[in-house]
Length: 294
Image (cartoon, rainbow, N blue to C red; front, side, top):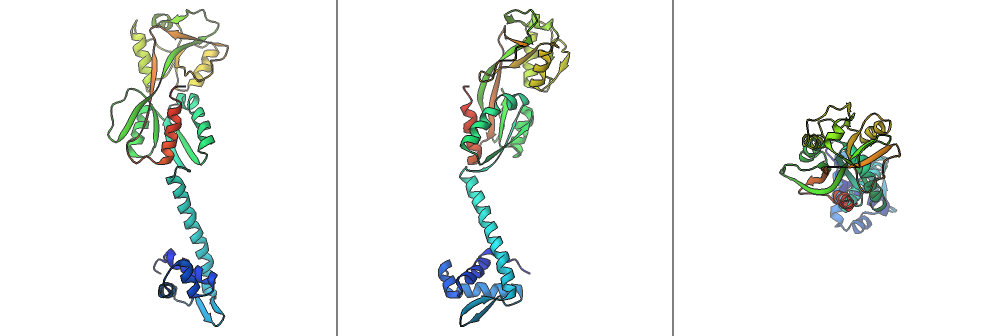
């Protein structure tokens, strides 16, 4: 059987509801001959009569009743699909895919998620743990919508990358250690260390910071989960270097936080496709930009 258009099904349902071809034509704002052609086309495709005409009006045949019941569900599903799309176009709903590091997800995104749920509850923000390079690659191939990445980054055609935040990197050391107020590379290099692995830009920045006074020390362990690193610091296993966002709480009492000399900063940027940004994605971007100064 050839495909049946929704317009034909809508006409059949209207006749069943109105009880006549003429009333259905008025309800659908169609010419009466068009209504007749729609039904003739349906009956030809089905291969059976769908309606019976008598003095009391028009009644569905048994086959017509089956098709009308299915048609009502199809038309309702089609209207629901269109409504979902309209809501997404208007930015009232939709799915936004965001890539970021574990540190950003743990420290910064909860604030964004809370704001988003308050003002744009219909937007489903799906978060993926990725490195900056993985995030940029997925943005370029269209499998992500927004990325929070470490800066600097080389320009990428089709993507817009803008600076977002610049947070200080601090030394986190066990509170029971005797340590200076300002932590230097030479002092920290002599301590047991817990550092990010070399797949991250922070690791490269830390290596350059140590190189200002000597060789890069060998850490006791390398991890990319900041909360796990802080737990090890609290247990006295070693010291670490991590960004500290002004909006996040101070570390627990078993951890002392110290500034670095020379200072070190972690710069973050927001990346997204330069064109074709949907409204739901624009709302997520607005929420993230609102965290810029926090």
